Image (cartoon, rainbow, N blue to C red; front, side, top):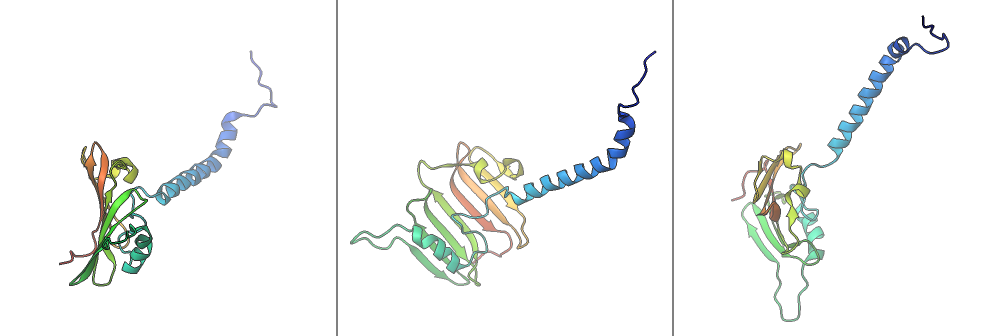
Length: 179
């Protein structure tokens, strides 16, 4: 016959007394993990710091210093077009992964779309732009994400070859198209 040393803790009884504490600990740990996942962007929301809703002046401040500098005798490489209901502009860039960036604003001067053209040899894997499991479309040449935001959301479209982006576009889902 086996005797149990009374000095040893009784596992079943101790577990029952610790159970509420363990449940609270499990809940808090899972809540922290969910919060960390929410804090981490799952899809990019800007190109060179310019995203949907950025003001025209903020976009200029971020992109003007990246613009190619003029050589003597060269003409300005920036294209700028005032449109009814908005503004369209394009920058030729240096020292970034993008050779050029184009954007369109609405009547209020907020960016409604922006497209970046990736420099040759600097292609960006689709998976670096967003979690592929969240994409609405993924092929060898295109990946598309629809991202909900408090302001109405945006669509990220990456186009290229072999799962790598050559052209990246962010399009507002909240604003009507600019004519």
